Length: 204
Image (cartoon, rainbow, N blue to C red; front, side):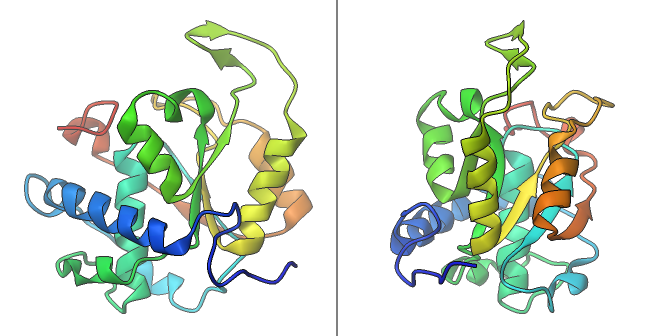
C-alpha cells in the first residue's frame, strides 16, 4: 500500500480544497436532511473502529446526489464522534476527506454543481451498458478499476452496483470482481425514502 500524502488525496486534489468544498456543500444541503426532511441514520456505531482505508460501502441508489450528500453528512459526523445523528453540523469543520464515491462520468460532467461534487471525491467511470440515453456494450476501462483501487488504498469508497436510480435494477458484476481482487472490508448501506423526498437529481 502506497504511503499517504498529507497534503493531497489519492488523485492529487489538495485536502484544503476538499475541506472547503465539503463544508460549503454540507451547509447548503444541511436543511434538506435536518429541516425540510429528517434524515434517520442507524448503524453508524459500527463505523467507529473501521480502518482508515480499504473499506467499501455498497449501496442502492435513489438519487444522483442526495444519496452521496447524506453519506458525507453521516461519515463526517462519525468522524467527530456523533453517532446516528447530524443535529450538530459543527462536524463539517472537520470532514471525512478520504471518502470517495463511484459515479458515472456522464452524470458528473453535466453542469457546475456536479463538477464541484466531483472534486469532493468522485471516482468517475464510463457505463458499459448505457451512454447518453442509449444502450451500449463496451469493455470495462481497466484504468477506471485501477482508480477505484487507488481510492480504496487511500480511504473509504462508496459504490452503487445498480448503476442507476431506477428501482429494483439488477446489480452489475464489477463490484463483485473488485471485492475479489482488492479484498476490502465491505459494508452494506440501505437508502430508503429518498425517492419520495427528492427528485432524481437530489432536489426537493
